[in-house]
Image (cartoon, rainbow, N blue to C red; front, side, top):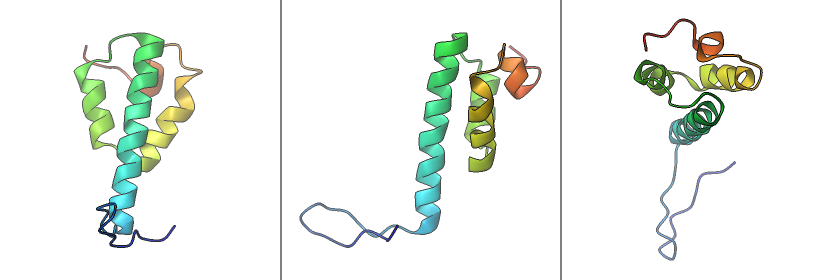
Length: 81
């Protein structure tokens, strides 16, 4: 995927690979949070903090577990809440 071009018609600016990866991680983190909430109800703040601090690879691993997990502990280990 190439960087966006400066285009006064749409206001986009060039992006760097790091910015694209950060955007992808943020999007996957939001998807993970939504799936967790739908499957298990309210997501504890310590789990949200783990998700916010996680790498893209870790988030992908958690996404792979969410549908088969019986509890949040199956995905994240023991939680404090």
